[in-house]
Image 1: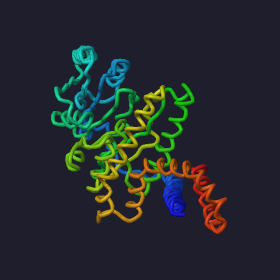
Image 2 (image 1 turned 30 degrees about the vertical axis):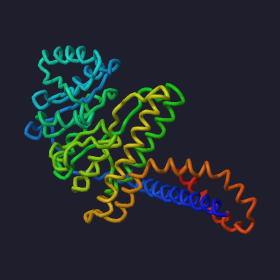
Image 3 (image 1 turned 180 degrees about the horizontal axis):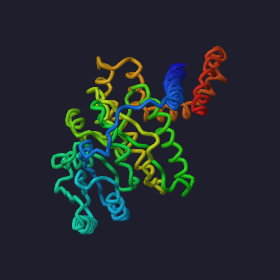
Image 4 (image 1 turned 120 degrees about the vertical axis):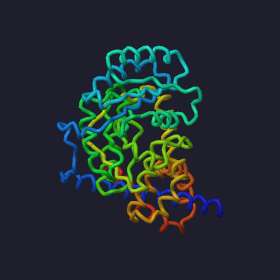
Length: 363
């Protein structure tokens, strides 16, 4: 009976964890619905006044992007923003022939009067975080916009985002991801569905109540001062964006999420690429839980509810593990149910946890 009890305890623990996460999602849904009725906004820059236009550096961290590099550069230079207040850094860590072709394309664009530079490193220490950190040293802008290679911001993107930095407490403005190839396949439709849930219910639900959200690694813009104050980019996790986001918010910097500003991008179209992306996001989330958990729960400047949502946010990848455990243990649990009649009450109580499935379905 020892093995049976071990199975019951592990199974019950996973069900409880899933239920907590489900209730958190339901709370975010209520927050999201309430936020849609709230149209109050903060102060914004008047970009018609040249004195109020902030200097922006756009950072493009790239690595062996042979198929999208030219499209990325040609799209970025179309951004509608005063050229005298705009700098573009191509942070190129590539190890293939694209280093040469990208350099040539950058030089061609620079010859037209655009302030664009091609920055390479001999040592790829820190990977993306290291490239962003090195570029920051030379960055002229007080605001730092970041785009991955497969993102294509619309021409008015900067004008819609930089205006919110008039509030000196705002450290980051994040925009919603769009999907250029949503209908390419069932795989892309599933990915788009999951990302849409994150970029609507979760990001708005957390941000509207002042809970911690995350810069999503791209399609957002940082105040340079915020990056420095939070300790700069660190490459000790696979999700350096989540790491810096939490360190910045623990320093009382505010994040602003713009659901109505969409930045289109391409989703992975093959399962190997999607699996690689999910591995990076989930392992990075777990690494950040290990790194940030104590800092979040011990912080004296955030309330209990924000701490709870923050911990569950960092535990997001663990929810998939709990679902797997419940699925695998459901078979021995059926055996236990049939063999041990005195546990009937336990299984009746366990039926309550079907509410988790109902909540997730509603969300």
